[in-house]
Image (cartoon, rainbow, N blue to C red):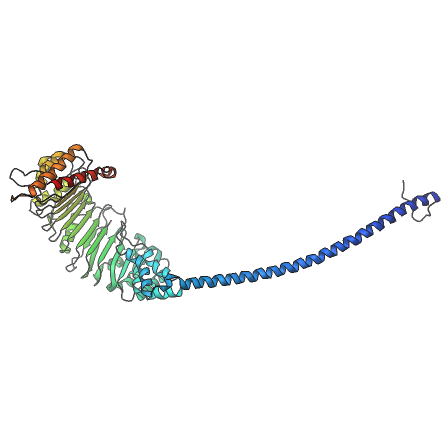
Length: 514
């Protein structure tokens, strides 16, 4: 069927049909135009409402922004006003400076296992000066805050100019205050220490303490820091690498000063310069766990430090016996040895002024005690010993003969503390009565502490010891012992369970009865 030709005139039948359709279409158009007018009116109303809403939104946003700005301003003002009222603002500058320096005071003795200062001791000054203008003013004017220089040469070698400027800044801000120096020199960076050491040596007259980690190798510039006269230097710590060479070359110590009292040595060997004038050092601590030192090293301390009163040697079992014997410490009053002597040593200490001795070993042998006692008995040098501390089980098996042999040489002993796993009641019996010649063992003994597991037999023997010596102390006999008023017995488990306290209560009850 083809589409009708619009250029032809419809016939009578078609015209009637077309007129019917035309009437329907005109009726639909009239209805739609009415709806069209309503729709356009609704769109216009919506557009008007939308524009009004946009204007309201813009106005609301502007109001909200203004409110936010006002709130921020008020909060900032409130924080400022609260800050004005904060108690810290009422602190005088002197108190604020004391607070800054309080952390530094905690690190005045740096001798932890690594003999080093924490780096925060130096950074606390810069942190305090970075808070606000007032804190910065107080921190910069607090000379005591700028008294630590802690340098790792490996790090400083990457930016030497900055570290040299930092050293100069600390020295300038501390003015004339004593300075604590800590320098770590790795083995492969010793050549980079030239400028750093030179800058530090310019302030050598202001050194208070010196810690230097020399590694396994130590160059001339590091050695320069251990040479010279330091008028206010009090403490020196020299350390090496904990697991370095087994027998490194010794570091030559040539520092002197009227206030120098302490020398701490860790994981390295130190020799005393023959050019060193009479030193005032009184306290030496030596930790030789990772090297094989020589007895001649200790002989150098005895010769170079005639005023030495306290000597602590850790790792004594590693010492190589060499040189003449005995080593004489004329002023030594306190000696500590840590590390077993596995055989009677061929070389002995001679300590005529010794009054306190401490030894510790895990080897289960008593040669460490014999080293302290019997060697000096041969020259009559331990009769003045007053305090004896035997840490860990360093006595080994005991019998009455050994107790008599050892402790009868200590007539002035006042304190005895030891750990004896094999102690028997006969040990207490030896102290509970005079010997065959009528003399008491350790007649001046006033404190006895033995770390051993409690048992009924030991408790009975210990209480008998307290009772007998207490009764003898009140007699008029010329050989009467002193009152044994402080007796402690038991190990850690006994202390936790309360049995040690029960024993001490029983001791007090015995003393009260006497």
